Structures are given as C-alpha cells and as structure tokens.
Length: 249
Length: 261
Image 1 (cartoon, rainbow over the protein chains, first blue to last red):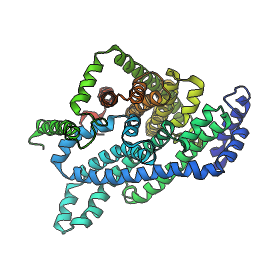
Image 2 (cartoon, chains in turn brown, blue; image 1 turned 30 degrees about the vertical axis):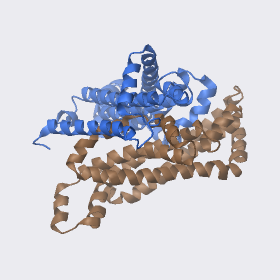
Image 3 (tube, each protein chain N blue to C red; image 1 turned 120 degrees about the horizontal axis):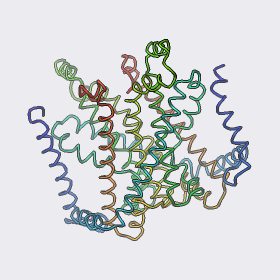
Image 4 (cartoon, rainbow over the protein chains, first blue to last red; image 1 turned 180 degrees about the vertical axis):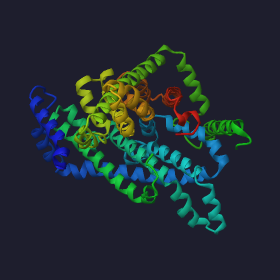
C-alpha cells in the first residue's frame, strides 16, 4: 500500500510525459531520454565531466565550511567584533552569488581555482552568518557552568561552542549546499571546456535535445543525492538536538 | 551592548563599513593588488554614482525587478493554492510527497538550457528559473503550516457547520500565515538570485546582463559598481519582505511580544 502511494503519482506523471512527448520537438519521450542518459553518462564523460564537477563542488563546499565556521566562531564570541562586522557581512550575503562569477574570472582566470573560488565565495556567507548567530545564542548558564567546571580551550570549543551552535551551523550548511550546486553549474556554463554545466549547455547549442534532458535529469539526481546525504549527516550530528525534543526550525 | 543600546551597535557597524571602504581604497592604492583588477573603493563608488544618473541603469534595474516580482508572485500564488489543497484533502499529502521530494532538490539552474531553447534571452527565461526556484520554498512552508492546524479546532469548525471555504479562510489560513511568510521571505531572496542569474547566463535584459557586458568589455570598475548595486538591491529586497512580514503578522503573538521567530 505504501509503495503504491509513493509510486502512484510519479508513474502517472511519466505516463503523461509519454503521452504528450510526441507533440513537441523539445520534449522527447522518456525512453529516448533514458537511452540518452545511459549512453551519455555511463561513458568516459562520467570521469571527464561529472566527477571533476562534483569534486570541485565538494572542495569549495568543504573550504567554505571550514572558513565559515572558523571565522563565525571567532566573530560570534566577540561582541564588539560582531557589532563591527555584521553590516559588512550582511552586505556580502545580500550579493547574489552568481554575479561574482564574472569578477572572479577576472581575478583567477577560468580554470579549476576560479570555479572552486566561486563556490567558496558563494557558500561561505550563509555558513558564516549562521555560525555567528548560533554562537551568539549560546546558553549563558551553560557557558558559566563550563567555566566553573574548568572546561577550557579545545574541549570547551568542541563540547560547548561548536556543539551548542551546531543546529544553526547545519542550517547554514544546508543553505550553502544548494547555493554550491547552483555555482558549480554556472561557473562551468560561463567559460569552460568540461564539466556538467558546460556539457549540458553544449548539448543545448547542438540541439541534442534528449541528451540535454538527460543532463537536466542527472543534475536533478545529483541534487537529490546530495540532499539525502546531507539529511543523513544532519540527523547524525544533531541527534542530541532532536532527542532533546527541540523542534526543527 | 544593552546599555550602550542600538546607538552603540550602529557606531560599531558604521565603523565596520568605514573600515571596509578604507581597506578597499588602500589595497589597490598601495599596490598590494593590481588596480586593474581591484579598483579603489572611491573609483567603484564614483562609477556607481555615474551610472545611477543614466536611464540605462534604471531600465536594467527595472527589468530585473519586474522578473523578480512577477516570478515571485506567480510562484507564491501557485504554491499557496496547491499547498493548501494538498494539505487539506485527505491522502493527497501522502500521494504527492515522493514527487515533491524528488523535484524540490533539482537545482533550478539545471533548467537554463531548456529556458534558453524555449524563450531565448527574454523575460520568459527569467520567469521560468525564478518560478521554479521560489515555488518549492513557499510550497514546503505552506505544507508545514497547514499541517500545524489544530485538529480539534478543525473538527470543531466542521461540527459548527463552517463551510470548506470558511474553514480555509478563518482557520487554516491564519494558522499557516506565519509559515507562509517565512516561505515568502526565503523565496524572495532566492528569486532575486535566480533573476540575476538568468540575466547573467542566458542574457535576458537586466542587471545581470549589464554585468556580463561590462565584464566582457573589460570595464572593471563598472563590474564592481554593478555588483555593489546588486548587493544593495538584495538588502532592500530582504528588508522589504521583513517589513511586510511584520505588518501582515502584527496580530501574531510571536511578533507582538517582539520575540524573534
């Protein structure tokens, strides 16, 4: 029964897609897209285009995470620093990340460093600002208790500051992940000779419609896989938080 | 901070902004970074001021805001109507959840090639990306909101003979409204990002296209000036939606008692 409920609408939608697919040049039938998917992506493209893209995304994302959490803790712990930097940081966050692509191309060329830098420059703000917010909202009683019990230095950082701020940090990381995927694709659409974004636009320019759709499908699956992965990590990291009966924000 | 109050905060904040400007002025002037790649802050702001008096800039800005507003409005109403229907009709939520969970994480930029084919560099492309990206933000929140309706209150309303429409109007909508506003706030930011992205990548008219033109013609100060402008507009968009949120929810306890939601 559960399986039926889960699959009923998707099956119906694919059938509807099949039914209308003949009517337009731009909408090939599902089986053609499926075949194009197998032929296109289960080939050397997987190694030449898909894996490097994903690698750059992860590299940029991890860098942004380290940078964002590190600076965020630093800023969050100091009241003055926070008050000084908050407007500046809010401004940087308000800049739509994709507009930085032309700028970073200017500064860092069009190779891998540019793409990783683009991803870092977009992902870092939500992580940074959420970390600041999380550190700021740490429980003062707990903070005093830590001091009383002599919990200091690295141990205090790990067990109290990072742990206490982790719900906000995870919220920032979640926002950053979707920005990261957008930037991965865009940085490759701009000036590149390989990568997922480049390949999909190439198919479109050559009117390889079924292949183009298969690329869109692949990006969708990638987004889905990353969000499932993220939810798994989040549930792990925040198990203490959900366990304590706190509601998900 | 409580003693010095908001005035002290403001002072620190202004000092921070001033510091950024000084830094951006000094770094290229001292030759730490080539001024061809990072013009001094005064030059960037001067370029921005120069651009602000040209009609072209305002036309571009208007195009961007039109794509943003239209796309956001379309996505918002579609998501609210669909969300309420899915949330209220029994069984519909279970039926649609797998599809929603599959479609939601698809990055909207994946639709760039499709939008290019269907609409070319025009408002249609912008709208397609903006609507897709912001629709899910609102829909998810509406679903949460409708799920938050108290079942006793719902049953009470039914036994008092309230029609389906009045139940939605007087019970479901007020309960879901805080969630809806959260969705709108998230969607407004995403919609602005995607509007600019569509212009940048596909070339639909607007701020993004201006940045692309400035970059390819090597007008570096103009690139910076337009990015600063995009940031300012982004701040404006966020502030406007927050204001709207407070207005619409002025009756809500969370806003009345000034507790940050």
